[in-house]
Amino acid sequence: MKFSIALSTQPTAFEALAYKGDFERNVAKIASLGYDGVELAVRDPNLLNVTRVQQVVREQGLEVPAIGTGQAYNEEGLSFTDPDQSVRARAIERIIDQIDLASTLESIVIVGLIRGRVVEGVGRERAMDWLVAALQECLEEAARRDVKLALEPLNRYETELINTVAQGLSLVARMKADNFGLLLDTFHMNIEEPSIEESILQAGPHIFHFHVADSNRWYPGGGHLGFATIVAALREVGYRGYLSVEALPLPDAQRCAQRAIEHLRQIIR
Ligand code: LER
Ligand code: MN
Image 1 (cartoon, helix red, strand yellow):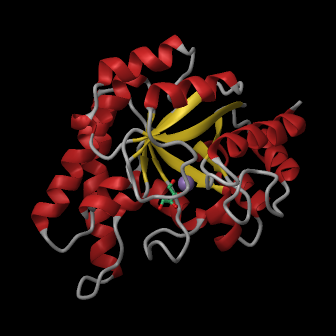
Image 2 (cartoon, helix red, strand yellow):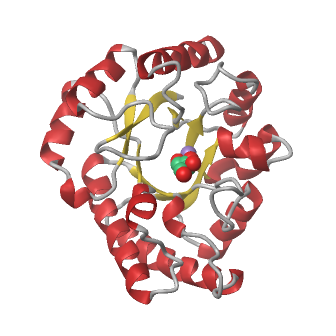
């Protein structure tokens, strides 16, 4: 298993990102702590100097395992399940732009909050149908570009659509696409799953990416989750991807990143 940490390429209101601000300096700090990769949270790839991003991460010897896309929802209101057809179309376009970026950086594209919520007057069934239609379109383009999409079950306070691993797995079965799987996040799992370890065993090969934060969304080791058994479950299902730290920058970004990798290394050693 390899280690990465999430970084935002632009200012954002989303708090659980240790690093924001000076991209070059932050990537250098992450590399110096011994991380293998940096996960990028990107609102709009069209606002990014992709050549520079690629150069900076390469110079530091880092991979970009995944691209987070939720800021397009949080900051622009784009979602696959908005009642307005033109908003849904823009959300699909945005993910297709992210797929283009992901094919350059050899990353997975995360489908988090951009799936949207069950809004009044729409209803769950129609929202699910819109979500499936949007995913279908994105997955076809992703397959052409050899890119994978990972849907992240999110806790009930963030969305009503896909909160649990079981719901995520049903959607995976419904989509019937090899390039579609799940991103599991221990922060959300701690709220929604009866057993984090059992849910990992059930998700097995459908786990494409993995976010780590402790019960309080501090760095692993900063709360009361047991990462030894979580890692053991991931090993049992043969997960060989990244443990990607998506945690609050507490007590500050640097100590969060350092303590996270120290704690996980102790377990994985
Ligand atoms: C994003 O990966 C995440 O975990 C969400 O909490 C974002 O709203
Ligand atoms: Mn997450």
